[in-house]
Image (cartoon, rainbow, N blue to C red; front, top):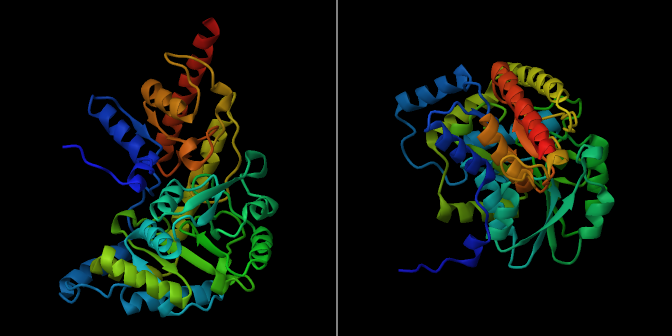
Length: 404
């Protein structure tokens, strides 16, 4: 039987990060020692006080029923209070929707906001799923690119040129996946001033890496003048609290949008895991000492990988100010051949996996084919060995291509 698939399903590419993980696992199954720098995942254990809260929730016997669709009121209150205290943003529990990870929060939002043919401006390089989520919702992504020379930051003038009558929103992440860029308060203010000129334009600010920020600029976009009712803030517990497997994300939005998302989520997935929500409450009510310790370690790893990459001829890389990725330009190696021609970022990742047994992610999936994404959320020992292998593989590529 030949199954007819929807045009939406066929328009979506597989996740690049999941794809590289699968290829790395296939190689491991053949007995190869593969080092993975492809995961967007902390390598730290979830802090003890969070785990303890989950155990206590189980032992209490009080959290075995379906939670409210939008999340427990206690958690929504704690999230709203966090924004009031940390950013002076006047969110209320009614503005908060808890979901199964920030990925679902964004998907729900796109399905709520977009009508067929609507456009969303995506600042590139972008997180891999933005484009797919927009297309699944029937919208059209409009890509506006930054450049390595400017730390991949997008000029507001370029954004303005992309705005038209179909534009519903602008989406970006800061700190950024995949580049680690952090927009300064001044730069975000310039963007807010542009947005204020278009009464129907919304901003989707993905701030999932808010805590993993090595700069002095920790800004919530909704805190900027006039932006509270124009912003949907996306966040979660996966990155800052090392809780990827707990699957708790959320968004904060104006009342009308939040209530519509809760209605939609009620049909798609209902509520988030009751035990995970109790763990998340504990995360918010505790101090940030454990988070800061993790961030301090990430900063050391960032400096290490930048130092290691600087020793590889032909690689260009900027100094990221947040998240746990570097996004080096490797295009100087394109056109070389061993054993097949390396013409783009996908070829480069295939080459490094086959030759160095190191898994990284092609930049084309983030909107920039000249680059590859490398995660440094692994041990220093793994980083040193992985970059050593990459350096040898690229040296071999260069030398053998020269002979040919």
